[in-house]
Amino acid sequence: MKHTRAVRTATACWALLAGLCAPLPSAATDSHLVYPLTTFNIDSRYDYDWTVLRTALEKTSARFGSFEMRPAAASMSPQRITQELAQPAGRINIFVRATDAELERAFLPIRIPVDKGLLGYRVFLVRQEDLPRFAAVRGVKDLRGLRAGLGKDWADVAILRGAGIEVVEGSTYDGLFAMLDAKRFDFFSRAADEAGREFAERSASQPQLALEPTLLLHYPLPRYFFVRRDAEGELLAKRIETGLETMIRDGSLDALFQRYKGKIIERGGLHRRRLIELHNPTLSPQTPLGRAELWYNPLTDK
Image (cartoon, rainbow, N blue to C red; front, side):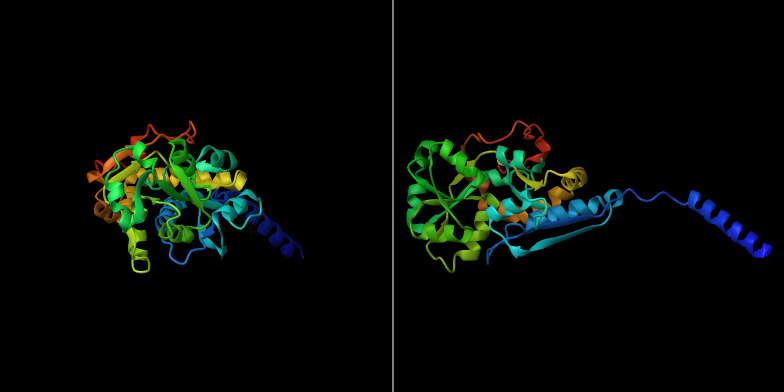
C-alpha cells in the first residue's frame, strides 16, 4: 500500500513538473473567412481579389495561425452583401468594394488598394454606332452631353454626378449590359481591367457592344477589403493588413497584379488614350494617397 502511494505521489510530481516545463500555448488564432458569392452567371471580377486575400493569409500563417476561406453558400446582391456584413451573425465576414466615407464609417477598412488603384482608371463599353461620338470627346464638358450607366449605389455614381455627368443606375450587373443595348444610357463606365474582359465575354451574345478605344477617365478610387467592426473583425483586419504589407515588400502583390491585369492593361493601350481627370469628393482623409508604392499608373506602367 505504501509503495503504491509513493508511486502515485511521484507520478503526480512528475506531471506537475511536466506541466511547468511545457511550452506555453500558441498565441496564433485560426481565421475563418466567408466572402460573398455573387449572383451572376458570367462574372470573373473577383478572382484576383480572392487570390490576393488568400495569399495575404498564407503570408501570415506563422504569426496568426491557420485559416479557412470559402464563399457563402447562397448568392447575394451588393445590397444584401452590405446588410449581411452589418449583422453580428451575418453570413459573411468580409467583402471587397470601392470605398467611400460612408462605407468606412460602417465597416472596418484595410486601407491598402487591393488592385493598386486600377479601378479608378475607366474605359467605356459603348454601342458600335456611337464610336464617332466618343472619338470627338476632349474633356469633361463633352462627357456632360452623354449619359453614363452604373450600378445602383456604386461609389462612382457620386463622382460622375459631382462632375455634372448624367448617371443612369441599374439594379443588376447583368442588366446594365442590356440597358446599354437598349439605349437607356450611352456608355457603361468600367475599370480598365474589367472592360476588355467583359467585352470578350459578351461580344458574341451582344454584337453591337464595342470597347471605346480613345478615352481614359480617371479618379482616385481605392478598392479595399472591409470587415465587421467587432473583435473578430479587428483581428482579421490586422492579419490581412500585415499580409498585404508583406506582399508589397516582397513583390508578390505586384506579381499577382501583373499576372491577372498585365495583359489586359497592355491590350487596352491605356498610355495612348486621352486622359480626363475627375475629383473624387467621397474619399476619406485617411486615404493613403501619399504612398506611391500602393498605386499603379498606367501611363508609366509602374
